[in-house]
Amino acid sequence: MTQYLPPPYSLQTPDIEKLKSRRAKLLAWMHSQGGGIAVIPSAPERARNRDNQYTYRHDSDFFYLTGFTEPNAWLILIAGDQDQSILFCLNKDEELEIWHGVRWGPKAAAEHFGFDRAEDVDSLDQSLPKLLPGHPRLFTTMSRPAGPELLSRLQLWVTQATTTTRGAQAIPHQWLDLSEVLAEMRLIKDADEQHIMRTAGRISAEGHVRAMQCAQPGKHEFELEAELLYTFRKHGAQAVAYNSIVAAGANACILHHAAGNSVMRDGDLVLIDAGCELDGYASDITRTFPANGKFSGPQRALYDIVLEAQYAAIALTSPAHHWNAGHDAAVRVLTQGLLEVGLLKGSLDEAIETSAYRPFYMHRTGHWLGMDVHDVGSYRKPPATHIERPWRMLQAGMVLTIEPGLYVRPAEHIPEEFWNIGIRIEDDAIVTDQGCELITRGVPVEADEIERLMKG
Image (cartoon, rainbow, N blue to C red; front, side):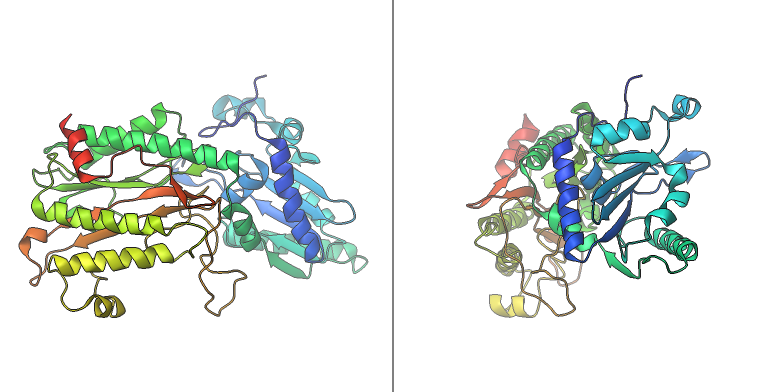
């Protein structure tokens, strides 16, 4: 029978040695903490409505360690005298596979993904209480989607193990969270991960180009969203990385406006924030363009300020600078621009010190990007404490977005020519040894280039 992974993912040839290496690295860290047993679930399925599930999407930590994308799966890692990796997954079931797709089953999964062994997930409740004795530490991902259900189930297994052993063997009395160590592992992307993200960036850029070319006054936001989705899937992306933002006119001043029924009017700007997910990795692009293909004077003035702010942040995206350097640079350019067009008064330093720019720019200039669109990893030097730590230095292999913006809502003190102008420009960057590589510039960013594209 042909091996098949349920949609939306169909990664048939995982790098087994890489997956084993990731698990070995995590096991080594567990040994450094005294050893123990790790219990890591994938994401649960979620009901959309009666007899219908949301399209399943694995948990990113689980996928990073296993490459396995079926639901109802658990990874057990034992850091002891002899390290072990055990997968619990759905068993083969011919009748259910007719309805929902062919499963790997434990035997094939163990071989294909490089586990020491795999078992039927239906045996999990019987097997875990037997695996826990002899391990004083229990490791898990406490902040992941399984959440309270996971902790309740772990407590039940520990209680059952305690009852069974009657004190003859150590039972986990210390629980440790794997979230931070996994975040640090995932923060630096290897060459293969970078390749996937470059491809995702290229596909997403093609979607933005198509949306720009299709835009015109009279069309609805959802029509441009349809062009994005069509292009993403046509070029092999399995899903969107997040719900697409398509915002026309005043909607562009709503940061997370979902594509809706609003109609693009002549003179409106359109802001699209959208990206695909390819083989488990996200892309994230924002472009802002005129619905009629021509920026007005006030629109162009603010657009050029935002683009200059992005260039300033890009220049400081390198291992020579810390995480927040790009944001500080962007804020300075944006604030200076607001002063020059008359939307702010006073001196530059005072406007920055008092955060006078905040009504027009209320978000950060970027975030980590990877398996999650807002990917894991501390922005400050680890380890985590309650004391504010210095910003961490950027390192080659980190991937982040660079996305300054300006949003001008109607107000008495704001000249009407600037009302309802919302602009954001966002690209994805891989940090290199010398600086950064922008992987999403397949879609125009200069105002003149955008106008030429829409005209042609």
